[in-house]
Image 1: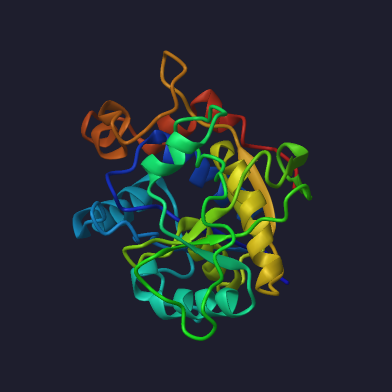
Image 2 (image 1 turned 120 degrees about the horizontal axis):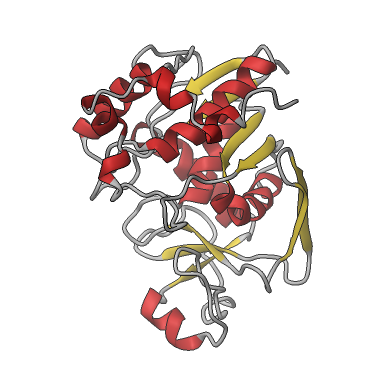
Length: 284
């Protein structure tokens, strides 16, 4: 298929320079492959996603120099392009996975899980599930809501792929990551499920994102397989950090795109920064 990349901001705050770096990598790779770039709003966080952040993302992306052929502002053949409007697709995938025995219902809280595990984990990484509810048998038929649904990983299986930026990477299911959430108790699909369903439906051929999501790819590959979908290629690039080496986050207001614009910085000037120049000229 022709190359199709995507930008997928979460409108839970205004975009910063780190977002621009990752998105610029996606745009550059689409350009190098003579392909298309798709814009999708990953707005499933009901408590933090706000219309002003959606509008702000569109404004800031255009200002920085991005363009896209499909998106929430211009439509396209594979819309809608906001995840909050695609709930029926996620529910269908959930029912499929429940019916075929890939999931189990879980009533554990995060506190329960943290108190049951022994091994440490990164603060921003889902802890390895201790298996408390793993043997629960799901009711066949429509998926029951009001519980958390977890994907039962194949313990001991090596899950790997060749990343377009980092080369061959591999993890062991059940050791490096455990049974993961695909549907939350409050009725919201997990990131892994929504991402897989949408990237497949929108025919994305390569996902370009930050290296902090590498382990998410292992989980997503299991979902692609379970749902009978073809996985795209992946490119996990380096993250932008502050002067202390801390990954940029939305709390770094001084490096927000709109703050930089208001301070008189131009997109051309920002794109001349070394971290952006490193993206230029990289091969496919």
